[in-house]
Image (cartoon, rainbow, N blue to C red; front, side, top):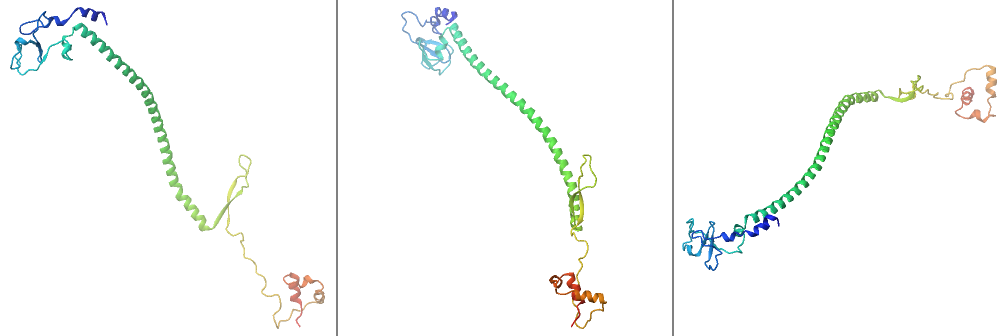
Length: 252
């Protein structure tokens, strides 16, 4: 307890408590008169107590009364405590409340600094995201326009190639590029590798009935007689000598 509160022990307010009407002291020696405390804030001795519950000091009617004694309950007991003691108690209460609020304020301030740093980082990230969004949106629009421009032309070119029946293959070029290599180029060619008609063979390889072979010279006759069956491959159907032999053979 402080020095002020220690000195307050020498000062007792109860020695100044008296009746508001007749000034009869409350702690007078040998006094057995009861005292009352009114709700309007006056001390009345039992000698001036009005039967109609009217305050003898301020004439307020219908007031509530409680017996005046040393061990009353708050807040009435606080009215009779010395002012220095009350100020000392109030100072402790103020100090307790101030320290509690200061601790909470420091905690909130630390949390504010953390959140402020986090918010600043989020702002920077948001700005960066907006830049990326602008760049990607522009690239997407450019790609969409390019695709919309190229698709009809590619479709038209493929349709023309299919209608013309032309295929293109990659073949080495006849020239070289800057690296000394022959680049691959598209070379068109017809869908069919055969450009001419396939020749057809003779309808018959023997003389029809009633047709005589042409007259040949003696050398040809000798040569024709030499086509004998001594060589089996000469009589094999499908060979050129077999065809010549069958054409020159006389009919019997």
